[in-house]
Length: 423
Ligand SMILES: [Ca+2]
Ligand SMILES: [Ca+2]
Image 1 (spheres, rainbow, N blue to C red):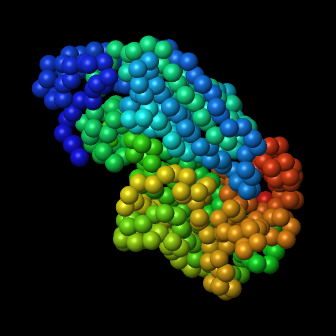
Image 2: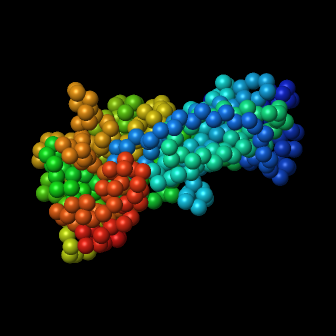
Image 3: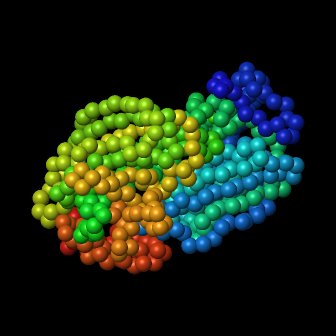
């Protein structure tokens, strides 16, 4: 892989290529006000064919959604390689929520395919297609979109521009989060605003629990490093144990389907953020890897009683470097296959949508149609001991009975009598 300072040029128009930094054209390029930004300075004239796949989103009690993305870019002559497709999640006011949600560069067939993960409360995304010095932006209402499928017919041949791309991965230095690493181009934050999700388990599986969703509670966030093709190259995670309203003991495990020959770096911290231990290992098959030890050793109190001060537990930061990049869709929905192993019962407790019985039913859906694991946006306030989640959150039932279409903000409307205080 060429790592030297290089120039990406577009060959389609017979432009005289230059590919060394000594080239006069390169110096000329750098002198231009917008040189190397890769960002559009003008509108890209296009005709867009929209073939989005509509339908109610799948609902697995999840607070995020994965939307498949297929974009094709062609100009009057041929498919356009090297066109950059970027998707931003917009908030309720139409402003980007800090970070890129997806980015990839079209291949030689003019195609980008990938997966966009957004919060279920997000209604709007912006899709920007940048080609040469021009950009075309589309606002897409994604409420009832399962796949974004669009063909952009660029209506005029573009004057090619030169951009600095030291690692030659097709993403200009200025837009490349890793300008000297050809295996990585973009970091996607989950959640997009860099905050956290709250992951909560009931541990009586296969018996129904008391639905207080506080037996094992974690704060979770991830960062995914994508390569220029939009595939996942590295995964970083941060977990903090924050409640254990259970008599049982548990270990926390992670399966990353399709991830093999990976390198895992990890660091454990105590509740005050002081280093406890660190290490690394080579993992041939990333299945059921223990991420946190016996839960009775990682937090000092339950954090589920109505008296006393909140005191968080231990935390883990880790990075998985994949042996080979994989499609985001292969990893499944957030928080990926993160599960507890209950030491007292020998059972594992997984999120919905990962494991089926022989009759096709979900192994982790109980007789009442309810899961044993939930991932909730933000610093969710879990119920006190023995307080049913339905008491703590009056709109929770609305939300799941409507398959996530109503009361999408159920988690932010607690009844203070039944849930722990804000921390
Ligand atoms: Ca680059
Ligand atoms: Ca790069």
